[in-house]
Length: 155
Image (cartoon, rainbow, N blue to C red):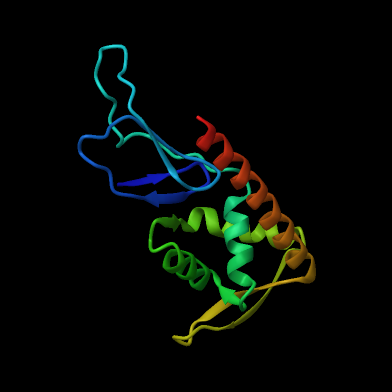
């Protein structure tokens, strides 16, 4: 099953036919299935549900990807898909606006170059400010992840 969130990141996961209900992704990117019947006693379809991600998650994924090496947009998307084993899909309509915002903030810089197939492409590279931002976002992600895990284990 594929679900897209408001920032264009598509999540794919398999569901058991006996499981139904509202599906959303928490700040950890884990699917949360809630089996609650609607007012007619029917279980709602998963097909129309959209996922929600914490704001900045796409930026964290991009920063982390660029920490290894400079890449063009398509390469960034491919690396994220590969690392997430295609459970996370980043749409072009979300990637390029995010790259633009991040460049405006000074987290990344870009320059034109030639791609592997000899096409002109814009390559993005992490700046020192971007490296600091990545460290801050990783720390925040770990803090939130631990808090959510503790809450889930307590209930």
